[in-house]
Image (cartoon, rainbow, N blue to C red; front, side):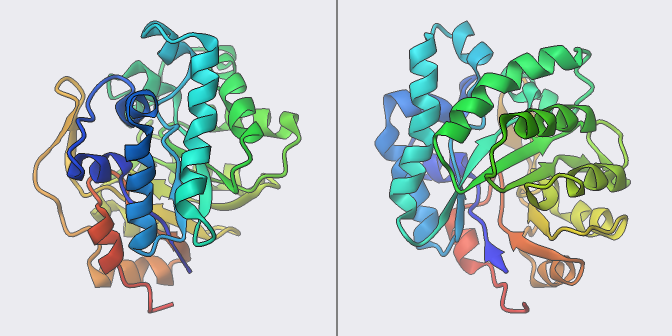
Length: 285
């Protein structure tokens, strides 16, 4: 059983940073990298054994739209791993965050999927970023907040073609009804990842906590589950903020259910603070 970190943006905001632009936490890689390292450190100090990097919102196409040049984008992706590595020390592993195509659109598409683009567009979007992140030598690749099986197929194929042996997990953004946010069967989504030789876990992230148990109950997996729900609030894509009240993400009964259903890596996503991670009890394992 391993404890994952929580929402990097949540930790950064608690430190007084403003996180709300198109690049979200990625902008701070240029303007305040020391703050990203400090936020990672807060999670390590809270007991996280795996921390995810600040690369989620970064992409070559998305950063170019904001005036970044190729070297700046590459440097920022590499720096995201380096900062996490410094904070982790010998106490935690580093998982390079690989966000979905929808994140670069900055319109909430990662919570809908069905982008209406071809697989070649998705390949072009992911290929170079994956190459840079793999070259940065993280311990793991966290392919996360994926709403759509079709996109995951593209990413896993690119990783196979790259030839890297870095372990990976895929976590889907999901909704009620045992479905991904693109209205696909979570069971099918799990099966796709389970067939990849580098996969060490498959699961769910940035999903309301009350949906996790039904999702896990809808399938079986040869891999352990990785689970890191958000705080149960709703994303306002126009205002680019979370709205509503948190809904008991780390209730002990829920965590016990997730463990019983095969979860072995558990943490949090948006709205989950270092303090929440510190209070999370996985002793049932």
